[in-house]
Image (cartoon, rainbow, N blue to C red; front, side, top):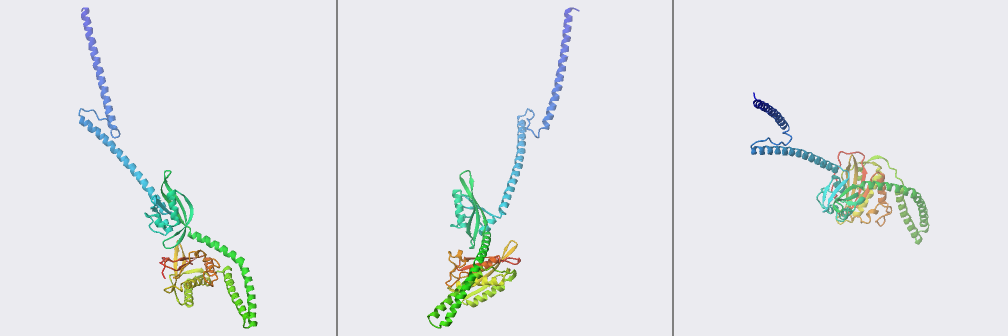
Length: 454
């Protein structure tokens, strides 16, 4: 074999080996590629529900676009469901907050009134309606509800216009029924930003009962001080008057008829008048001894009506309504009611259509207790506005021959029995004196207040 032939055979063998190796390499690459493709496809299938995947390669563009859109739609639907869930949670939270706010406002013991910037009451709780004595406060102008000239209207208006804050103010409010109430008021503006005022919040508390209680305490203290100071002085006055009266009687007996006897008679008349005043004052100043026996008021009132009808027959007097029992002294209570009824009859005796007096009894419920109210109505000329605050002061009188101690004694008797007495004018004419006493025991049902009519 020649060298050329040997060389050619070697070259051929090299190419055969190279070709075999190339085929082997291609086979390995193909196997690896196949394994990688299967792994990629399994991974793609496992994450297809959560991740927007790139659709598999395809030769059809329509199928590719449809697969892409389906993935986007699935993702949007998942997001929409999540948003709905979050929105529902937020809505329930807002409703719970609003419901809690309404319950707190409705059950507040203090009255709450919210007035918007236009002067309309946008919100009011039941306590506010009770304190003001007005139903359906909502969506009404505050000045119309509270009164154009009332002090409360002025304070709310100043808060809305100037942004003024009022803390623990005390104002008088006249309810539609004529009741005058003392209210504790706190008013604050509702601001948006630093300057703009969007409304006012008004907190109301009825201080009428508290003020009446403080007044009773002060009156009891004053009565005790006056009694201690004046009882001795009045006693000395009576002794001196008795001496003067004795000498005057001796002069009358010795002088017979004439100028001296007339002068002595005038002295006796004046001493009797002064003695009456001193006796009334002692009755006012002397401490009262009150028993705690139950007193049936119906019998007491019936006797009072009978006595006044007999003494002033030209006036028609009657009583109505429930008269319960109170603890106290029957004689003193009869004296107080008799004084009020007689005053009412004397005030209405000159009425154009004839004098009329009515004593009305009412049982008023306060939570678990009851109070007895007796109101004495008349159709007289009423009480001058300037005289109303002075009626129960000692020695203040509008009668020509009055001592000014009758109503003061009435107030002392009622206060010593744990009650109160007040006076007011009636819208239809005449006056009303209201006596309130604690009832002995609870009754099944309180009688609703009726319209004043006599």
